[in-house]
Image (cartoon, rainbow, N blue to C red; front, side, top):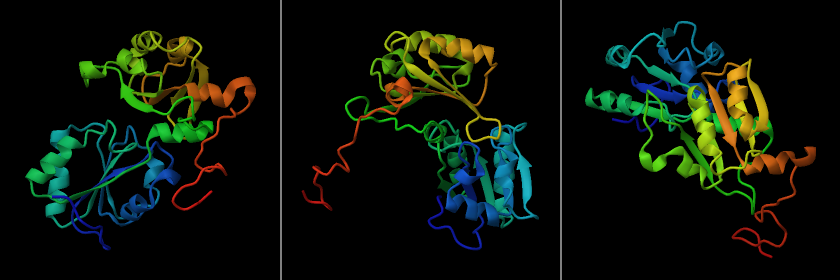
Length: 268
């Protein structure tokens, strides 16, 4: 039972918000407005920094969920809404990627609890911005793949096995894979050259974020040396080579703003 419109004051409902990668300034305007008004904030405190809550109401109820199961979280949200309170369910990153909201939406709908989805910035977007790169470069790479390697918590379908995706040699953004990085590196090396640039991005958007730009063949060793086991994203892309070759930006240019390119709003 999705909410059709966000009202002010907030209607009693669950507002599922993507908090982005960690930087409070990367919240969407809509997410910030809802956070400022909500009665209850249910947030994944192990993945979302406390600074994200700096604008919430002083009297808002804050519920941390790092030590709770879904079976404990859902009744809390349902009870608050039935008590005519507005509830924010605050997740990290963008809700369309690895956010585990499908089962929450299903349960809320079955309980006749209205909800609304407010998307957030994904870590791969924030990482590309930090690096100052575009992941689609004309005549070099025009596809971005967002994926992960199979793990204990979530198996990847056989048709999406990492090596088969690596065969495209696209810009590949690898999530949730630090614990299996040797296996991931081996599969990537089947198709990407060993010197393909990789950005290892730890806690992008947090105050202690770190980024290492290294060749693919060192991806696993750097991960282990730096003890990276969580909140780590890997960008594997020919676009990184174009951006940083010889310490200067590449020369590839899009046709979109080229003076010889005509389109609906600009005629040659």
